[in-house]
Length: 227
Image (cartoon, rainbow, N blue to C red; front, side):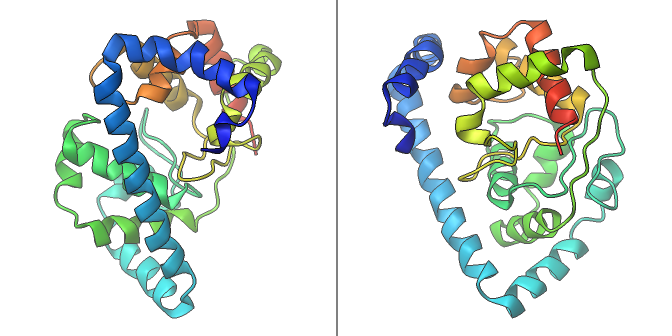
């Protein structure tokens, strides 16, 4: 994996991931991480094949829209969330959306509505929905604690860019965070840190356990205002 290539990145591995592995059990989590990577690679290949076929791509997006009637109640007609603490989905990485559907379905993420909804969709349904939302335009949500904007930028660029990119738009199946709602990002980080049972991700917990509430508010503010 490319992020093992430098000494600095290896130091980050030691700093953030090893403590989390000690908390959860390294062998089981290593296996889980390998399975996650294999699934992500499979999804990337499938979605790449679809996007290379313009006719199929357009058809999948159209059929995805037909499957989002319930989704719009929380995530909005244009993919910009309208319910408290729901995330924006517009412009989101399609591989990430499908991966999160899988997590809701198998219990790694826990939400009464989303967990039940995820179990009603086939994998093809999930891909169609993901492609539909990925084509929408994400707009910066704004808000947060603007006095923490510069601090949030610093923290983000120190610990988040390897997966989520310098522009916050995600890479290699990771989430796009640029423009995401302040309240949602803040809640998400706290769930990873506090291990509430609502979501499980070794990497994110390894980062979040070292962030204070102020750090989280700062990062959430920076991302909410990042275009």
